[in-house]
Length: 85
Image (cartoon, rainbow, N blue to C red):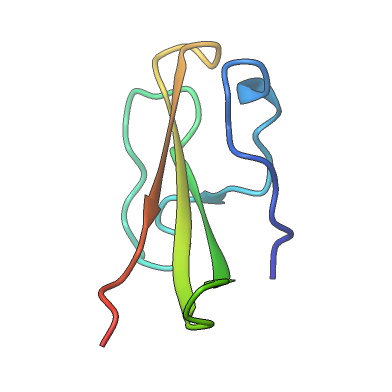
């Protein structure tokens, strides 16, 4: 289990830590021509509604990719909420 952290912003992009290198769990081959392999982090959260008291599970997914040079990078972040049954 990895600790949760604050969302990635322009000011803390360089301190992104705890990512899993691509292929760690999937066996995907390394991407050629990049300074560092892409990495991702999936965080689980549960929120209970103060109105219905029903829990909602959601995931914050953060991915970071690199270019030819290590200082060329992009961080993408999204929230995924599975459909409730």
